[in-house]
Image (cartoon, rainbow, N blue to C red; front, top):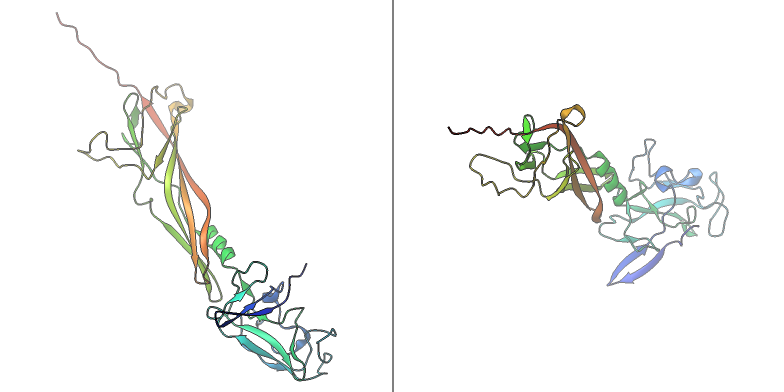
Length: 289
């Protein structure tokens, strides 16, 4: 069902237009062959409003003359030069709308005035750009490798029962990740920030740690880490003689745009898994004579 057409309001001394979105406006030139295309053959905005005599509104009321050069002379006028400066709002959501070039056009016929194009009196040059959709595109393009797992004792060696194993994510991985998507002059940038790690220890246990964990180094207090796990049995009886140690990092997503728009998107995760061997330390006792 088509939404209402344009309505002009006067708010705080500024003329603010409410625009209903014409479906597919960014993918076609003005109908009827007149007025010049505001999108070129490659789909790029031309930022031009040429002259013509055709009637893009068809034979309905307020449409002027017929097509094929008949009827009053018509031309495309630039109504809004910059929709960052002059707000265009959807009549239903009251959210700002933005064209690829920032310009909005109307089709004007001599003796008739503005003529509706497919039911709309104002057209976004180059088509509408949805900043939220751009944010989703940017998120899909974010390059985030699986997290780099570190442990002490070292994950490449052997872990031991009854000894707390320190767990952390390498600091070179634990950082914000950003990506930007752009259409015309509108862009949206997403930022993915790691916030917590869920460790699957492979022995049936799990640990949830806020932050990356503390990296072990010589001289660090044994109680300095807030992310440890103590194995109570060895991995000797497990498949392959090892446990699957996994780290699933939760990343929270925010986005901004020059439209301006912004907010949050659903969190994403990245997971790494490695095999660790957990052994027992054999105590050796001596008996005095």
